[in-house]
Amino acid sequence: MAARCSIAFMIMASCLSVVVSGGLPGDLFALSVASKLRVDRNSTARASSDFGRIVAAAPEAVLHPATPADIAELVRFSASSPSPFPVAPRGQGHSARGQSLAPGGVVVDMRALASRRGRVNVSAGAAPYVDAGGEQLWVDVLRATLEHGLAPRVWTDYLRITVAGTLSNAGIGGQAFRHGPQIANVLELDVITGTGDMVTCSRDKDSDLFFAVLGGLGQFGIITRARIGLMPAPKRVRWVRLAYSDVATFTKDQELLISKRASEAGFDYVEGQVQLNRTLTEGPKSTPFFSSSDIGRLAGLASKSESGVIYVIECAMYYNESTSTTMDQKLESILGQLSFEEGFVFTKDVRYVQFLDRVREEERVLRSIGMWDVPHPWLNLFVPRSRILDFDAGVFKGVFAGANPVGVILMYPMNRNMWDDRMMAVASDNDVFYAVGLLRSAVVVDDVERLEKENEAVLAFCHNEDIECKQYLPYYTSQDGWQRHFGAKWSRVADLKAKYDPHRILSPGQRIFSSPA
Ligand code: FAD
Figure 1 (cartoon, protein in one colour):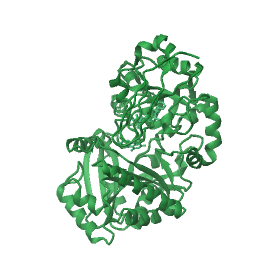
Figure 2 (cartoon, protein in one colour):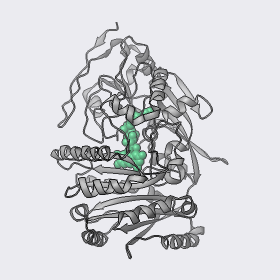
Figure 3 (cartoon, rainbow, N blue to C red):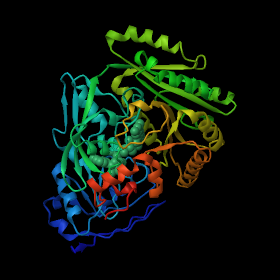
């Protein structure tokens, strides 16, 4: 048995889990990566929580790798040790429920790799692509690809998260209805498996690993490079929001916009938000998109509706100087087919980068009022189209009636046929399903409990009403929950885990498998 050095400590989070760790094998510190391991309290404390601020657990050490080979050496050591310890790659730590933590093990600070030159390389040939380090922020990938007039096709709403962090989930956003989630646009990966092997995989080579890692919640390997397909980048974006007071009209129009017929000639991006009257009247008086008078008009619309709930389609059309007239005509034609409330169309004309990086502005506003670094008990669900109206009635007009859900509520449809079932990400079974994001913030600590109870009430409502929701950015506390989540994919998940991470070392914060064996 390897000697264990005791560098354990406890972290006391104001609101939650406390984990005591047990030490790492002492001979770990004789490896060549030892100089890149930090065990001081500052380093481990920084890797002890995440954007959610709900779960907290300290690792024993944090690895700041200089190369992917450093990570492989660490993983290989753990896998071959008589006492394997958990290893969690951490991107930006923007998960909400401790998914990037490694209690009692080592967190790999993937962002350390970003300081190395040459971690983003663009190939601008006939079928252009970018090779991006898994640790890269999407905003940096955007900057690099734009230098060649190119860009990835699908974006998350927020760009200060890492390539591998979103590919481990799926990576969804307003372009996914047409191009699928980000994982559908990956051509090749470099992966370090749970045995420390460095493998380059694709649809044709070691394809089981390739498909396992995409949407694989960090369970099968650590992504150190992703090759992602690119398209010509537009210069400008017409950014449009349309308000509705009736949910059936709102969803009918959203589904029209993502249908093949409309999508070919229509918007390049389609999302939507649910606005409860209280968020309009009690929230910020202006946003980076809406002026204070727009918000006043929207609040007026909400107060006239019986439920106090209104809906906003957010959509965008890309264009360049040479295509601006055609874009105007296209926009007019498509708006003519929609049934939003008369006069409730709001438009902005912005640079492409400004549009993609729009949440950065909201981040600045929230930071300035102390509402960014607060707990985020988020719940994200995929709701089948067939039950979205029931969900709306039971949740927005039921569970949330009279509540004060500070934060944003997203609701937008995607096409199921753009999801590849060989990948581990789990989608809903309907041909069209809605991403519903309850992206709420706890302004005071007591709010966490209240918001968590509301989340439980939402899940209980879906369960009782037989609404087959799937969680996105999933979180379950039992293996039963995970088995139900993966459904028919579960046996593949278990088999591939046994093949690629037999000691159950990787990403223990997801709590899918007990760790390590
Ligand atoms: P981390 O939180 O660091 O890690 C997430 C998981 O991935 C962990 O299990 C970790 O161990 C694993 N992991 C990290 N790096 C690697 C790697 N190199 N190889 C293998 N596994 C790895 N998601 C969307 O899809 N669409 C959105 O529009 C969207 N908007 C968001 C907006 C905000 C403000 C925030 C905070 C999150 C948003 N997300 C969105 C969710 C986000 O995609 C996930 O939380 C993602 O995991 C964050 O990336 P990260 O780099 O912070 O990952």
